[in-house]
Amino acid sequence: MAKIAIYAGSFDPITRGHEDLVVRSLEFVDRLVVAVANNSAKAPLFDLEERKRLIRAAVGDDKRVEVRDFTGLLVDFAREVGASLIIRGLRAVSDFEYEFQMALMNRHLSPGLETVFMVPSLDTTYISSSIVREVARLGGNVDGLVHPAVAQALQARFDLDGESKK
Image 1 (cartoon, rainbow, N blue to C red):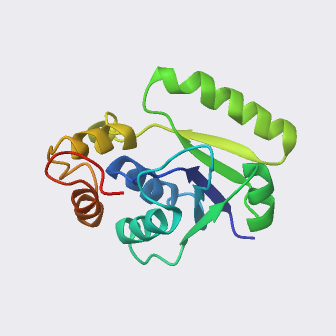
Image 2: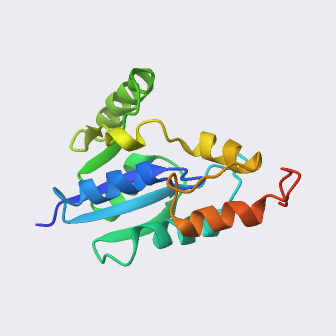
């Protein structure tokens, strides 16, 4: 039976840190569903379809990676796709408390669903989507922080004055 994992997030936008976890997750799962959260309470820079397109560009055409969006509880989505693992990245100690609480709640809601915490590679530890968005908004260079397709999308999104074109 195939080991299926979910790596969920907003991915607004996907960064080299996210990509690192995708690639490394494939070392111990047969299939990875990159699950893009459709959260109406947030106002993302990129819409859902743009984020999914950018993820696909960043992770390539590996058939073991599926990019899907979801709404609602992650445990329900995990059941829908047959996942037994949730992949979560921990960049800093400050991430742990929230992620630990979420893992316990997910286990409460779905006892067979395990959470695997992964630390990023050393060269991607400091990268976050929010920092990448801010650097891009202010006209900074995001090369090396994101895939070239994402850098291009960020550049297209912001004009020379640093204001969003959205």
